[in-house]
Image 1 (tube, rainbow, N blue to C red):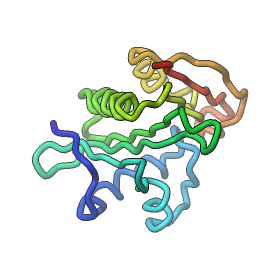
Image 2 (image 1 turned 135 degrees about the vertical axis):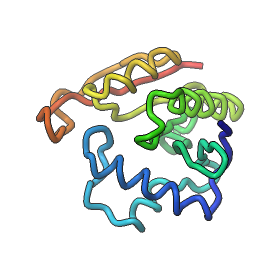
Image 3 (image 1 turned 135 degrees about the horizontal axis):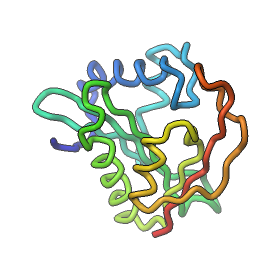
Image 4 (image 1 turned 180 degrees about the horizontal axis):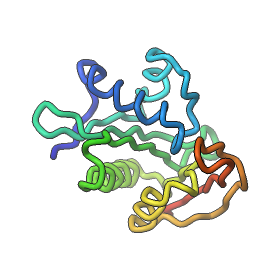
Length: 161
């Protein structure tokens, strides 16, 4: 597996991953009815942020985006988001993308990385982030409307560098 910067030609393979994850409505706070154009604008980061793909040959296994969490006085903290294709889950793609994003942020001098909205019901992601040094610093009760579980909490998670 290789993680490399997203190029425009990748959207044909990244777009369906984003659509699949967003339409499931069980992990991301994005509108499940968003259009492909809206998905592109939300997922593809402008510099100094970056969007990457994890590939195996010409197959896109997953994608990540990373950048500054907040402007101005909060600009010393990074953020990132990750999506893995259904057929590639459980094979270490998410962990590799998380490590890439953490290295990216450290190399750019950020003080840490913050995830603003991790559904507490997304146990695999929460545990993956904990293994990579994140901690839950707060939970907003009932802030995420899960399609099967009803309202669940959204964690704010942080990794200090």
